[in-house]
Image 1: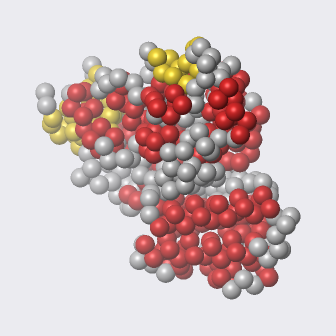
Image 2 (image 1 turned 90 degrees about the horizontal axis):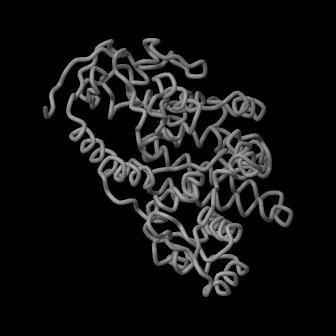
Length: 415
């Protein structure tokens, strides 16, 4: 069989547990996949964003790709749409997901039913070749389903968990320009037979990789800054260690950054993603992953500006936070312009759906700082004029949280 369009019952469709977006145990049930999609890393699934983009009804021109495994119709492409449909009809449930604004879904849906070989090719073309997958997910898919050799990027992560636990490393330029064979060798690492070797102790090797990860996160090495200078951006102590260890024999490395996620580092990250209003918290509540363009470049500049403020706020004028508020206004204006909207129109269109993405603590933060759909435009304009009230950093962070969610709707990376 090649391909044919068949109408299948929504309740019979089975969610793909090996979806490269977020694979789960192959024996997991639909409810397990839904729980993971909503409770886990929602930036990978963006179900609320998809529901908003779909509008009032399900579009029959977008066919899910389905492969029958025996009598079970597995959804290889279109899992997010099917999840929304199953939530709408009550075939799966979740207490923390608002289904009141979901599009109308039919109980039977036309599907592209095909062989697994064709389904995998279609999935790769739609996601792997278009750039909607992150590099690590694409490399996993190519190895597992297309039987290609493991990439250096994938081998490094399988041996360390470095990339899968640090999303800022899961970028194309990091794969192509930082974690290359040549660079790894220059740093004292080597890939042999899908294993990672190093000339250091495991503690030293972990410290060097963590340092490099931090330099990428802080944008000390990018396609524009220190490009290709992987060794040069490292701390001096690590440069010295690498120079002194060149003659050491390489041995299998036992490094696991996944353990850090369960220890102190993991707890610190959890605090960050809860977006509690603290001075050492990221602006926008968390890192944003946006499509390339002017909005993304300005966002990154504001993020850097806030980092500068955190590092040197004791030396800076009390008026400095006003600059950040002014920058937020410019960011909102730029995002609105790219949607052919004014700022007030942009807020009216996206505020409500953005607020649905916030948890109870975040909504309380907005309320405490008087940030609402009725006040945010004026608060942004106030910042543009640098009035004294715009120096309120707590209110600025609250504005950034909801603004970040709106920008994720309009400029977030496609999944």
